[in-house]
Image 1 (cartoon, rainbow over the protein chains, first blue to last red):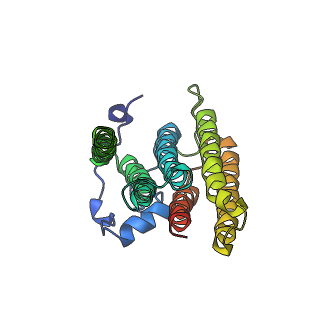
Image 2: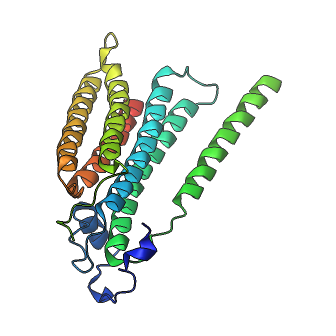
Length: 150
Length: 104
């Protein structure tokens, strides 16, 4: 069964009831996506559960980043550059927190899109996260190589 | 539509329950790492507070996952509702606790 065959996308919904305000509408949607908007109809529960598993996978990604930050803070020796250890730890923690926030936001927006029979929300976040992590790793590799050479 | 039970041949409810459990195990690692500094000799009092908050947050996450597992047992499974948002916010709380561990 696919989204296209569910027959909901063909139906005309009044989209004027959708609360599109970026902050408050978003927050309300986080806590009760099935009530905001009231329009639309609940999707097949299997789609909702798949959305929930995706959310949980992102939460685990966030938890792994947080665990990495905590491990850096506690198990790395003081690094030659002042506060570099703390900077790495805080960067990982901030990244983990952002991943968690974005996970719930994306979950709620996907839930709403499924209710409304709309396209699932697209996101640049995975690409941005990948680039940030890759750049961070590259910087550390450069630092290690410089340290070995100089 | 909501009250119609579509057979769950893909075991999606069970897979979701296991995903909650996996996530709980990840949260356990984070909780232990956040609590660890409190057990160093002559640890500052702040670390004890961080450890207490980490244990409370961990208990909260486990309780949420337990509640969600019960919701998943219904036919059809109940929607995630607030559990999902609360879980994410407690995870953010762990990131903040981690910041305290770094700064203390």
